[in-house]
Length: 162
Image 1 (tube, rainbow, N blue to C red):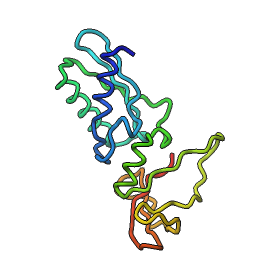
Image 2 (tube, one colour; image 1 turned 120 degrees about the horizontal axis):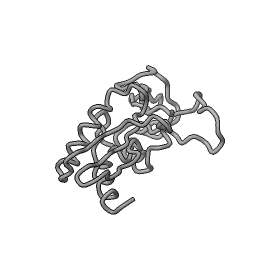
Image 3 (spheres, rainbow, N blue to C red; image 1 turned 90 degrees about the vertical axis):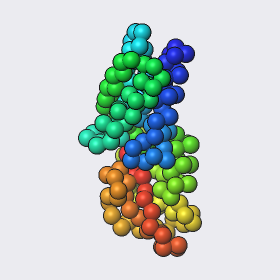
Image 4 (cartoon, rainbow, N blue to C red; image 1 turned 120 degrees about the vertical axis):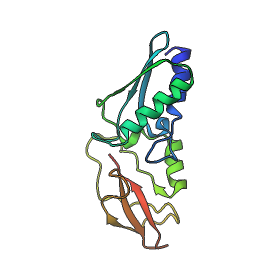
């Protein structure tokens, strides 16, 4: 990656996620690459958190705006579906920010290949208790579920493991 591509990648990666503005696209792990195609021409590769994610259009527009402000005349944002995005792509800083924001971050998939277990205890981002219950499989976005802590009684979102 050239120094210009690194700079543009940092810039595109600093764009806030439209659904979770506490995270940047870089921290969320959806920015896959930035390539300079020629003078004033850049291609950005973006992977949605799931196929059909309604935020992909807003992400693309926000990236285009940020790079246009940097002086890039032609920005092409392409959707890349393979490899698929995984919650393992969220950075440690992104996980910290989710918890600080009151959203239980997803756990990393274990070293072994295979499905993510669905009977995991979820830690409350408010008090740390693992005595939590599922209220709804879906929350404000399809990638989060709504839970409540039995200890502190606070409801919270949990970013589902994918």
